[in-house]
Image 1 (cartoon, rainbow, N blue to C red):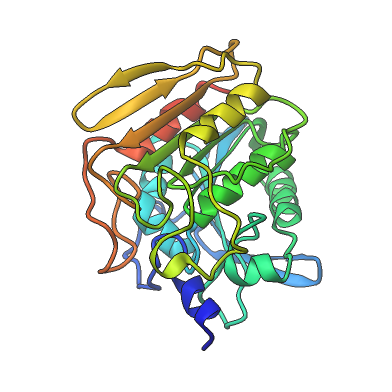
Image 2: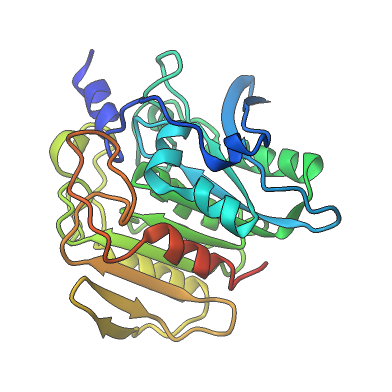
Length: 308
C-alpha cells in the first residue's frame, strides 16, 4: 500500500470498522437497512434510521458524515446521533464516501482533502443532493429542516455542503474540521456551528500542515486557523466580524453577532484533540475523550433553532 493510501486510513479519527450493537431504533423494529443509491454510475451506500411513525408530521433530517477511513456504523457509534434521533423524533442518515477498497476506508471529496475521493474528484456534493431528494420523495422529511454535520474529513465535507447546497441545507456543524482560505461563499446564508480541539495534532487549531499520518491524504494546501471557519461563515451570513467570547474551564465559545436565523458559533475545546466531544473513540489509538461538552446535544440544539 502506498504512503498516501496508508494516510487515507488515518483521516478523521482513523476509524476502525467494528461491529455495532443494535441501536434503540433497530430494537424498535424501524427501518435500519443499509441502502444504495446509484449516482454518477456508482452505487453509493447509506444507513438510514427512521423515527417512530407520526402520520402527517414532517420530520427533520440530520446527515452525519463519517471521518476519513470510517463508515456509516463507525459514525453512528462515535456520535450517538441515532439515540438522539430516537428521543427527539427526527431522521438521521449516515452516508458513506468512496474507496478503492471493497466496503472499507471511505473518504469524502471535500476539495483539498481527502484520499481516494479527492484524487478521483468524486462528485460527493451531487451524491448528497441526490440522497436528500431521494429521502424527501420516500419519507415525510421536512425540506426546510435538512442539516449536515460530520467529523474531520466529514466535517470538511459538511462545510462544502453548506457552501454548495445552500438551497438544501438549513445549517451545518463541522467537528474537528477546517477551511483552507480559498472557498467560494454560498449562494445564500447558512447557519454554522463549529467544534475544534486545542490539542488536535491532526487538524491543528492554529492552522498549517496537517499532523501525523494525515500528511499525504490531501493535496498539501495548508489549513487555516480554526477561528477562520467562523470568519468565513460570519461574512457569508452578513454577521459582525468580531465575535463575543465566553470562557469556561472546558472550552472557549465564540458567538458572532448575526441577523436572526444566521447564527455562527465556534467552540474550541481546551483539553481535547481530534475527537467527537462526549462521544466514543473511533479506535483504540484515538485521542482521549471528555464529557464537558456533548457535541451531539449541542449540535441538535443548534439545528433545531434554524430552518431554511
